[in-house]
Each structure stands twice: as C-alpha cells, then as structure tokens.
Length: 70
Image (cartoon, rainbow, N blue to C red):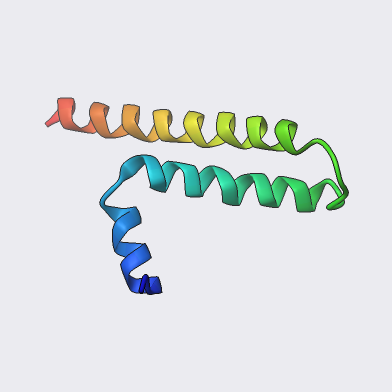
C-alpha cells in the first residue's frame, strides 16, 4: 500500500518527479486563472513548464554566482 508519506518520500528522491509536480501545480493555477474551462490544456502546460524552468534556471544561476563570490 502506498501512503502519502511514501509518495512524498518517492518524489523527494526523484528530481524529475518534483519538477513535474511543480509544472502540474502551475498549469492548474494557470487553468484556474483562465476561467477553468475546457480546452487549452497543452497551452497551460507549456506556459507552466516555461515558467517553472525559467525560475529553476534563475535560481541555479544565483546559487552558482553566490558560490563563486566566496
């Protein structure tokens, strides 16, 4: 039986699963913001994917820059 704790642990151990979950959540919020109607699910997904990946890249660049300054 897979419990929520097991699922959470599994997600933490797989960065791709974490990224996918972040994209899913952002796509859901984009869908809600657009009125929650049918259609455009691919558009919502691609917007979310771009936003999440851009944010991840910026975070990575900032962490990398901080490490170099030390």
